Amino acid sequence: MPTAVLAGSFPENTAAEPLGRIGVLEVRLARNASEIAAAQEVRYRVFYDELGARPNGPQAAAGRDTDRFDEVCDHLLVFDTSLPGPDHRRIVGTYRLLRQEVAAEAGGFYSEDEFELRNLVARHPGQRFLELGRSCVLPQYRSKRTIELLWQGIWAYINLHRIGVMTGCASFHGTVPAVHAEALSYLAHNCRASREWDVRAVAGRYCPIDLMPAEAITMKSALAALPPLIKGYLRVGAKIGDGCVIDHQFGTVDVFIVMPVKQIAARYVSYYGGEAERFAA
Image (cartoon, rainbow, N blue to C red; front, side, top):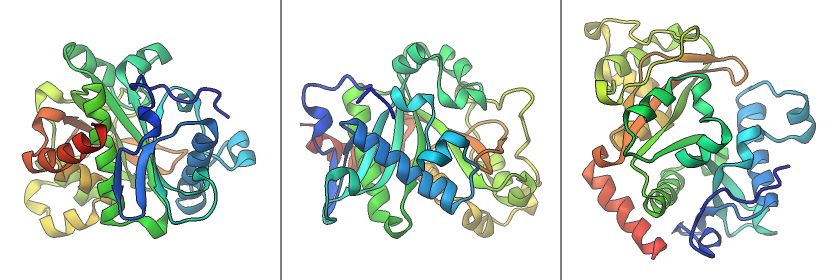
């Protein structure tokens, strides 16, 4: 179990305060080890029990999805306040947040095992990067409302920490890129990052995503085949890096997401930014 409570350098008491609220759902950062452990249990239920990832021995014994980054990351949590019991038993969704300065002290970002993120960071010394990861929501809470609430929390967080660029991996289920040929090819032809923001999969793990010519893609079916998380990222203006990587532990095909905050669609900045200011005030 992580011994650290939070990696964040928030103003006093901010970590304990809500960063967003919709109905009975509330989003804030984890504020103690019990909440982090409960978030790891939610991740295990989604990634391993539901989606078939393969746990190592300690993960299986504990029933929690854990790795070394949990001790240094901030953990964004969605709570159903209508549920009985203590807060750590009300967690229904989570995101893991790793800021650039914390990653530097921890030896790098999580996604550097798959994509050349360090090169991107080096090209933009004036920016502050945030890595998003381990996104999951329990099945009965997978709704537009929950996703909106997570984004409210993320916006409050990036405002508080003056983040300039959000990055991270997003996944297709399975380990055969060709199964997702149309959706991956749609991303390759329509959603690729500009040269300034491009990130390539690491040598030795690189798999191409341009598997079909543009004229062979049916946009409607390609969009329907995109995982909801990737569609959500694209909706706010995210772009896709070069290539994909197969993650055999989690049983996924991973692509890289890059979102410079200044390039995010204005309507989302207006909506989520307004909510962030309200809860960060």
